[in-house]
Amino acid sequence: MEQADIKATVKSFYAGVAKERQTTCCKSKQNPYGEQEDIVRELNLGVSCGNPVALSSLQAGEVVLDLGSGGGLDCFLAAERVGEHGLVIGVDMTPEMISKANGNKAKLGVANVEFRLGEIERLPVDSSSVDVVISNCVLNLVPDKLAAFKEIHRVLKPEGRACISDVVLLSPLPEDVQKDPEAWAGCIAGALPKETYVELAREAGFSRIEVMSETSFGKEGMDERLKGKLQSLSYVLRK
Image (cartoon, rainbow, N blue to C red; front, side, top):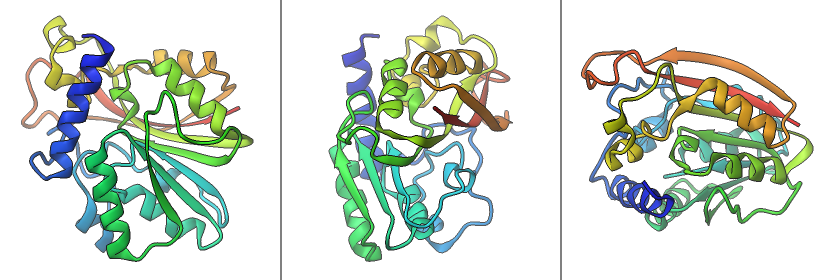
C-alpha cells in the first residue's frame, strides 16, 4: 500500500473509534493496565498494547509528549504523575480524536494537558523541549518509522527518554495480511520484528535501548494466520 493510502485508512478507522463505531484494533490484546482506575474504565478505548506511563518513571515537573494520544487516557495518567508544574502534550493525526480528547479534558478538569493535531513524522513540537516521549500501540501504524524515530530524537532533551509500547512480529506475516488495509488499521500489517525496531532507533540516533517487557498475544479468537506471530513489546530509548 502507498503511504497516503495507509494514512487515509488509519485516519478513517480511528475516526470511527473516536465516535465509538469500533472498540478495539486487535481482538487478541489483553488489558495492559492491570488494576483499572476509574479513569481507565471510563476512557479506555481498547486500542492499547502496553502501559508506557507505568514504565516511564515520570517525575514531577517533567514535560511529556504522547504520540498518537487518541482520547487522552495515557495523557491524563501522565498528568497525575508530573503534577501541576509539569505538562503533557498529546499529538494525534485524527481530528475526531483531538475533539474527543479535549472533551475528556473538559470533563475531567485537567489543566496541565494540551492536545495538538499533527503527524508523528512531522511533530508540532519544538526541538529539545520534551523530557519524556510515550507511545502506546501507535508506531506500528506509521508508514515511515525511521522518520518517526528521528522526530522522537529531535524533540527530546539531551537527557530525555522515550518509553514505547508497540506490536512487533515474531515471524513474517502472510502476504495477503501485509497488503490488507484493515490489517494496517488493526496494528498488524505495519508491525516489524523487534530487531528491525532496534536498528531503526539506532539509525535515528538512539544509543541506549532497553527492553522492559515482552508479552505474546493470546490465541483465543485470533485469526489463524496470525497465531504465534505477534507480541507486545515495551522498551525505553535514550540518546
